[in-house]
Length: 132
Image 1 (cartoon, rainbow, N blue to C red):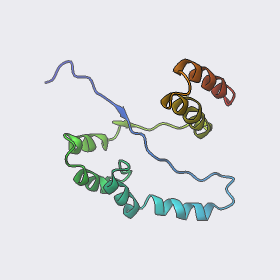
Image 2 (cartoon, one colour):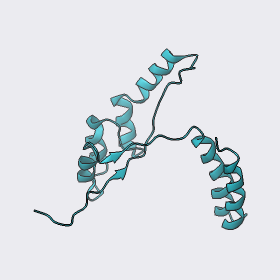
Image 3 (tube, one colour):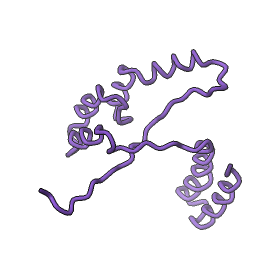
């Protein structure tokens, strides 16, 4: 018996796909998502190291191509268990907020055009303007 061990949960962040109920092309969109999320496509991404595969059947490809990462196989096995990885729903304004962050905070600070304080204040004003 192990005493004092807490269960750890980590978020798994990846790409999510959906079809809007107002889409003019739901069948075409479904076909595109089917290709993007196919085993063949996910194997390519896993080989390139782009993303943790969304299919358990591709986890071995990811692990094999990144076998130099200590503990990766064990982490993949644990992360695939129900209740370990927690899904979340991105807000409707996520993409807009992300673009504002990159353009107005990350880039100006990294290239030395603005201080963190100035860029953060400007970015916060812009983000406040998109709140639903």
